[in-house]
Length: 318
Image (cartoon, rainbow, N blue to C red; front, side, top):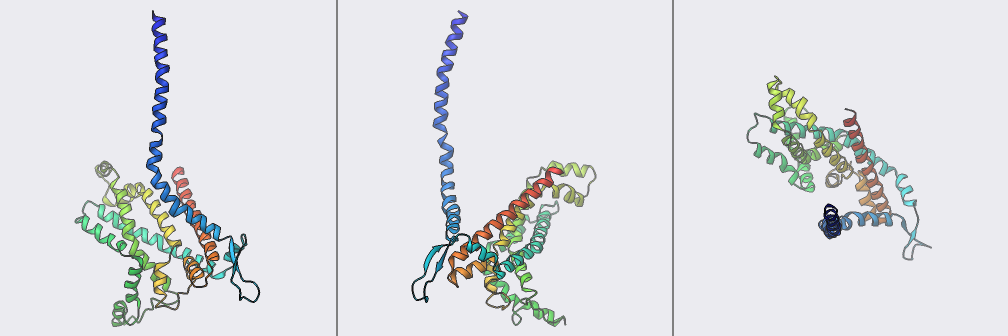
């Protein structure tokens, strides 16, 4: 009797197994259906443009004879990339934005962390108002922000210059050859400090409040709580904002493009993005511009991924 029962149960179990597998097979397309809109948009607006840029970078327009005939597009392989690395102005633009990032990114993230700590402190009041006030510059488009700051940089219109003259400090050239890069850095810092502050503040809000109470019971001051409890636990947010800032630094375009109208020290190849824009729309050389864009994208990926690997290794060793 027992053997018969076990045989019947085995038969029923084996009959239920295909049914379970069939239900699972019917449920597997559901995640693909949810991911489909993202995958379609990702392919349309990310993968396809990159692939097309790579494709265009392998061709060049050639003019035959005396140049009277229409130019012919020919396959040139990697010659556009050799031209990119042989262009001194493009290399100088990369060096300029790297110097910009080395100085501007740490300063901006230090301000953002300080503001987030102040808003998250126990004695903070009107936190919603200050969060909105600090975030407001990010809501202003970069072109508009550059136009607003250009009025503050012009010698005849700048109230800053007028105040300095009234205090007998002399005139300051915000658009000089040695200062214009840092004037751009000031605009970018003003724009994105509040955005990064919100990310860091969200990381602070995710920390359990019990840790702070335990530190206070142990006699820790608010300064020690901020530096030894909050700051180490908010490192993932700092890493995220650093990656965003690295990507944004290499994509610097709007601010120098606007300031070009009022400063002769900003040339058409001042940043890598300006170089690609100039090649595509001024010199009518979209193939070389595509090669510049591809080189810039690869460089951005290498720097971002390298920074992530460096920070992850340090966190593992700790």
